[in-house]
Image (cartoon, rainbow, N blue to C red):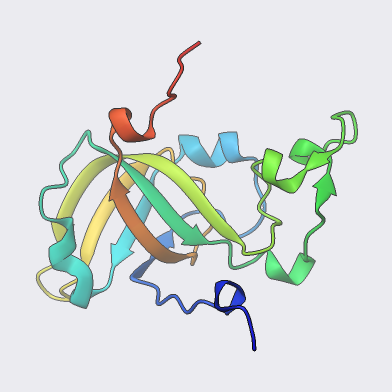
Length: 150
């Protein structure tokens, strides 16, 4: 009998990311650029209550990373000068489930009348163009902030 905790999980994208980045770029560079989160029409009502200035936790698939595979230990930032660490102690895109998580700031939020898609213009997102959107969660400092500042 198999262990149900180890069964594959199926996730359906709720949208995708539009970004000027079509390949690897440093996260710091990507976060400075404006990106667009497109939410499919059947999920568009879910953006109600999101406003410019809000911060959101954005979960997305690192869709270009699987072709490179992953290592459980690596040099952070792909820089050999950095000591080797376990992948879970890094922000590497090359990880077992290729899931990215970034807190972004909303610049504009609307539903496109012609397509029915929800459109979120954001900054501080480090997702590549075409990344499938897994989920959006409103960022709340009380839940998502550093539990012990400093």
